[in-house]
Structure formats: structure tokens, C-alpha cells
Image (cartoon, rainbow, N blue to C red; front, top):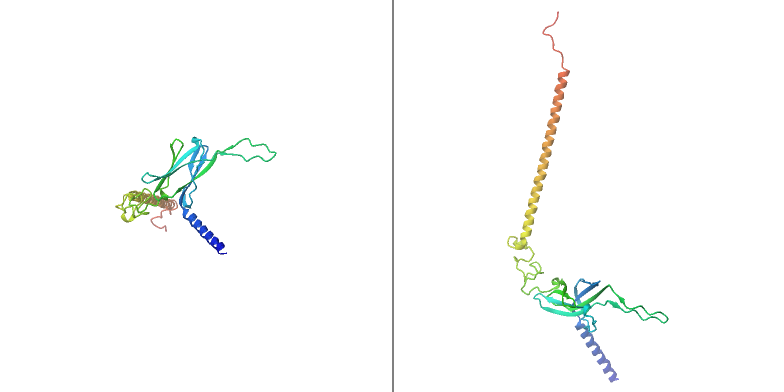
Length: 252
């Protein structure tokens, strides 16, 4: 009985150790989808998440023309991760059922996809993709996934708004610090845009006032013409219906 209890206890300990070992392998990773479309390659949306690193693939196809090389580059152009990969472009048909004819041959795919998993690096900047001849064919900027705030360097994807530790309040970082409007070089565009808006507003106001003034002048001229016309008609009617002149004295 004691021996069985010891066995159960040991099994429990081993299962716990295995559980924690598996949990310890779960790390933050890059998930990099890649698409193949009739020889044209493209990146999907690269994200980071908690996950596991897949085992190394030692079963790559021998045809070098279908091998690709991918690498993760840091901000100082250091290679952080790299590996070969390939797309599965041929699918073998299933074996025929008894009595059926064998399939004509493997199916060639025009479109397919692959997934590359890299460990996450805080200073990962770009992912480069090369063909079998190590010629760069694609590059994707992933600086937006980096976490380098606090390294005393204002990176291209950082600004005073996103990382005050690295970027100066009046530095050139494509962010206009309103509190330093006349000192921040990035506020030049904003100032110019405001001046242009003010000029456009002023010109529009002048145009509206000029239009109203023309309308008022035209209205005054119209009223003047109408008044002159009525005065003319009144005088003309008075002259045509006037009384005949009276005699100087009465007849007895």
C-alpha cells in the first residue's frame, strides 16, 4: 500500500513538473504570416502574442529555388533571428480506394501560405525576406511592435508624445508640442497651416463682404430707378390732366 502511495505521489510531482515546464516555454513571439500567389510573395499582418516556439524544421525541400530565408533586424541592423522556410506547393493525392483508379499525380498549388514564428525582441525593427540566392525581395517595418522607450534614443517610431524618456520636448520627431509652439521645429507645418487657414478665412470674409456690398449697391440703384420712374409718371400724369387756365375777370 505504501509503495502504491509513493508511486502516486511521484506521478503527481512529475505531472506538476511537466506542467510548469510546458508553461515556462510559453513566451512572447512574433507571428509572421507569408503568402504565395503564383510566385509573388507578400506579408500578412505581423502581430505579437504569447505562444510557443515550434520545433526546428529539418524536413525542408531539397529544391533550392523554392527555399526562402527570413530574418529579424534590430534598430542597429543586428540580425536577431533568422531561418529558412518553404511553401508547400505540391499536395499528394490520397491513395485510391479499392476498385478506384489511381490519381493522375500530385496537385500543384498556385496559392498557399506559410507561418514563421520568431521569439519577441524589444528592439525588433524590420523583417527581411530573401530568395534562395539571398537576394532581398521583401522588407516589412515592424518598429511599431518594438518596446525600446527608455533606451535614451528617440527612434523613428517614437515621439515626445509616445516616449518622453527618449524624445526631447522640442526635438524633431514629427510631433508638434503645443506647449512649445514657437520652439518645436515640428510645429512649422501647423503654424503654416494655421496662417494659410487665416488667410483663406480673411479672403473668404472679404469676398462675402464684397458680395454683400455689391448686392446693397445694386438694391440702392434699383430703388433709385424705381423711385425716379414713379416721380416721372406722376409728373407726366399731372401735366396731361391739368386744369385749363382761368380768365382774368368775370363777365357781367
